[in-house]
Length: 210
Image (cartoon, rainbow, N blue to C red; front, side, top):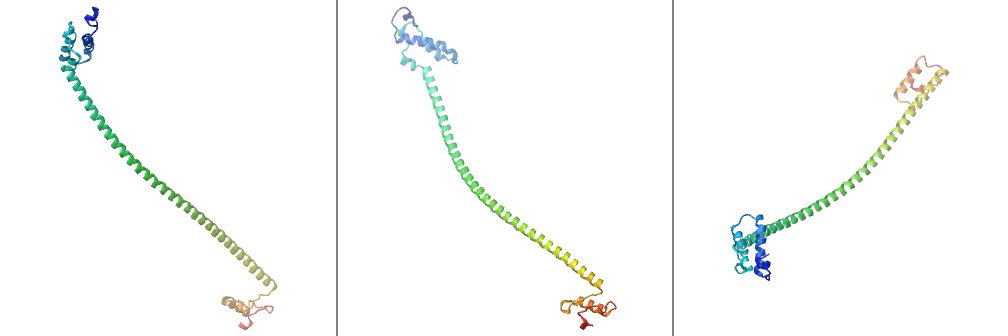
């Protein structure tokens, strides 16, 4: 509080400047030592109100001029940095947008490739099933043919052995008709008929060949 106010006088602009000086004096410890600030505080705390600087004179003081200029320079510097960051951010956003579009295109291409692969897989599975079905049919047919061949062979052996045994038991040995014989059978029949084994009861169908 200004001295004149303590004495009961009315507060004026000069008393406000005195209070402002007290405020600067209390807060100057938070600032680095500054001779211009000390001189300004001394002027603001003068006892005579008329000797104190006016608000316009305080703003024109070298301390405030320098401080305001420094603040303005700092603001400009930060503004410039902020603008540069904004430009860099916009550039990065544009790059990210391009990358996003590219990734989207790649994903779309991969999706199409996946669909094509799935289609090929289904077609391959269908062909595989057809192959397995044909394979099973061929195996079944092969087994059936083998069984028929084995059965026919076994039946032929049994029929032939039974016929020969029955003819030997009866003492007869019928030769096959010439028209039904191959060369080996015909030769064997001729030899049998011309040998001692050819008995009177031998019903030979190849007499003309003797």
